[in-house]
Length: 106
Image (cartoon, rainbow, N blue to C red):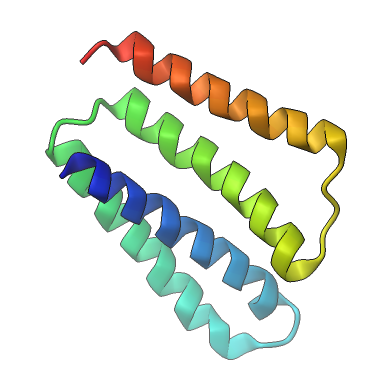
């Protein structure tokens, strides 16, 4: 169940961040969606912590997956750049999260 909470936290945060771009470019009503997304992200993150995910692992997965997914989806939705160096960075983020998870040894 803890990883269901983690997935919820990541997807809520990414959705809120992607919506923030649209809200900031003239669609002020979308700020309500942004607020709900961030609140849900923290609710889900709290659920993950309560079900036993160590804080370092939870925060690492949440932020790293959020950065990687936001970069990928901002390319698809907002047509922002995705350079080979950015792709390498996303790969390194994934490797870093994997190392944190393996190092936690739980």
